Each structure stands twice: as structure tokens, then as C-alpha cells.
Amino acid sequence: MSGHDGRYAPSPTGPLHLGNLRTALLAWLFARSASSRFLLRIEDLDRGRSRPEHEDGQLRDLAAIGVDWDGEPLRQSQRADRYEEALSQLRALGLVYPCWCTRADLRQAASAPHGELPEGSYPGTCRELSSRQRAERERSGRPAALRVRADAEPVAFADRRLGRVETAVDDLVVRRADGTHAYNLAVVVDDADQGVQEVVRGSDLAETTPRQVWLARRLGLPEPAYAHVPLVLGGDGRRLAKRDGAITLEARLALGERPATVRGALAASVGLCAPGDEPDTAQLIAAFDPDRLPRAAPHVRLPGLVPDASTDPRG
Image (cartoon, rainbow, N blue to C red; front, side, top):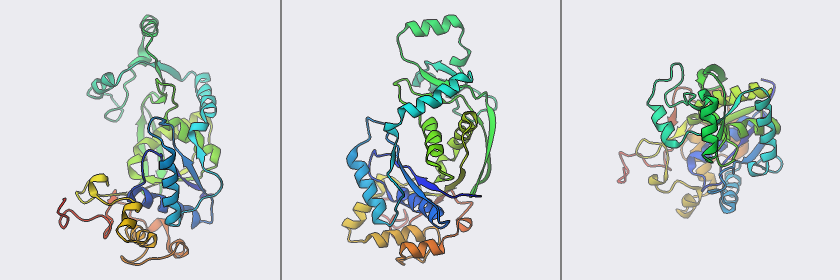
């Protein structure tokens, strides 16, 4: 692969937990170990939940564990015009149609068979509306979301951890009914505009990647490489969450730990150092080999930071 410029893209809707920080550290190591740029993007499309104080706290936490970045962070809330340009391209290709389906409609559709599509995919309800049906919905005054016709096209991508991944792509939303551009559209445009060459993120997001690859191809944008890394499990064996206790950097510092201790535990969880070690960032870069990350495990634990259910009374 010719380039490794990477990025981390948090949503400022709350503090980063240890799983988020571990993913950020890995994304940073992928880039820095290849002497490449590492970029930051603030994914604040959810204006109702995004808060400046959360953004400030996230940036402080990243810096505290040694994650630095090049240039000023990009903010999605300032890029509506750019997303609308991409939407216009899709319109010009005849791919965009309005969708009036409510959440109740989508729940009902989720129980219907979709042929080649994964379970829960959009079955194309509003794509098949007659002119009369569409006019009736327009007269209702209810705003419509915008979807693109993907026609259940199978899309494959190569992942450095997961290997080849292939999924049929459903008709995805590109602009929500409230006028907000959808995440899948925004992230594709942003990665291309920022020159991101490799996307490193949690394995839970792998299922959205074929949609993004499909959009990038329709928009004529370069496709980054992908590496979906294991999620962090909590003490009860589920994804890390508030129920697991002191799972933010602030909470760990309040317990008397140092950022280097937390960084070492995050690194030890993927075999970059021994448990209890406190390597500096230069040592982590020197030790990092992306091809030696665990490939099969979709999840890992954080010994010493997140207790195991067998020893934790909360479990």
C-alpha cells in the first residue's frame, strides 16, 4: 500500500471510554509507525447531543495518552455545503429518491424477507412508489429523508484484520428528514477530502463499510484501506459501557493512576508490551506491527483496568 495517512473521528457526545482510547491509540500507531500523517475529525453532525466541553475533554484525553495529530481538526458541522455537493452528484446520476418511512415502518420492514440483503436492511419501500403515492406523501407535509438506489449490489473490500468482506448494499439514507446529512455520506467525503489512506476503527463498524465503499465508487472518490480492530469487552462480557465502572481516563486518574499506566494497559491488551509496563510512545511505535494484531478475536479485555465478571462483584 502506497500510503498510511490515518485518522481518528470521535463524536463529541460524551467522554471517550477506554475502548475508544484504545482504538484511537491503534489508529495512531498504524499511521505513525509508517511515518505518516495522523488527522483528527470531529463528527458533530448530531447537533442535539454534541457539546464543546465533550470535544475539549476528548482532545485532552487523546493528548494525555500520547496521541498527537497533524493540523487543525476537521468539523463536520462546518461542511454541509461540501456534503450537498456530493448529494448533487448522486442526484445527477439518478440515484436519489425521497423516503417517508417512519421508524415504525422500518421496524415492520425489518421483519420482512429482503432476498440478498442482510437482515434489517431497507427493502426499497419508497423507491417503488407510484407518482400518485409520492404526490400524496408530499401533500402530507411530512419531510422526507433522501436515499440512494443501491439495488442490493454486492460490494467487497479487503480488511487488514478481517480479510475479504462482502455484503449486499441496501438503499441507504444520505440526508435525514431533518436536513442533516447522513454519517455514511459525510465520512466518505471527509476521508477523501482529508486525504485519509487507511481507516482504522472498531470492528462493530465493519458492517457499514460496504455502504461507504459503494458511495465512494459512485462519487469517484479514492477508497482508503481498512483495518477493523477488536472492541473492548466490559466485565460482564458485553461491549464496554458505563455499567463497567471507572472506564474513562478521568476516572482512572481519580483512582491515582497516571496516563502512562493507562496507555500501557491499552497497549498490553494487544500484545505491544507486558501487563504493568509503561512504554512511552516512541517505544510503542518501535514495537508496533499491524500484521501481528489479533485477527480472529472481535473483542479483547483490558486486564487491570476493566475487571473480569468472575472477580468483580458488579458482574
